[in-house]
Image 1 (cartoon, rainbow, N blue to C red):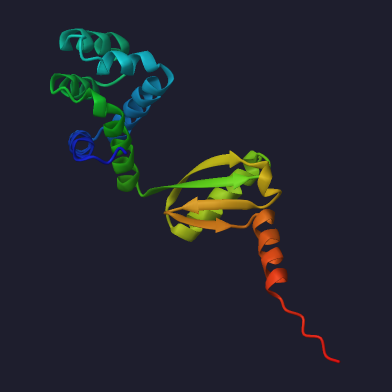
Image 2 (image 1 turned 90 degrees about the vertical axis):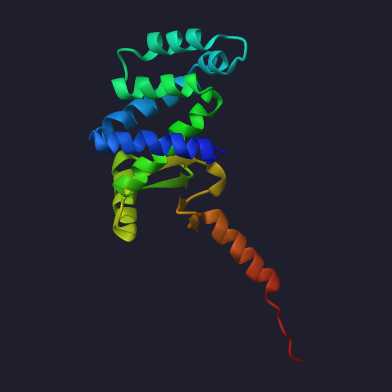
Length: 185
């Protein structure tokens, strides 16, 4: 879980600094880039979390990796995380920053599951409909699951709207089992 107190405090500090310096968007890009790097190159995280490797070496590696790719404030933040020996919380801190950013910008994340991949036009229509319903900007993540046969499942704000064919078939099946036929003689 990435909502530990350490993660939240560090992310909030970085976010408040970003807001003060009017760099919220730039630092969000930095944070997403670093998070993607940590996810795609597990050796970075292994190096950062290894207890035998010296802090000075960890700082040097981060400087080499991100020196010309992220802002000065983001680099200083990374150095602070390493200095305070909180690198095992780094991914959680970065995810928390993204959550704070979304909250600040009024962005909601929606996940849609369909039986086939939506075209760009269909995707835009779904985003538009959800944005109108929730009065917010929507970041849409799409999954394909052929088991739903057709239709779609939308998840947003811990709510789910299941409009899949499988859902309706299961509901009809249940109703048929529950239906009792009374025969008159």
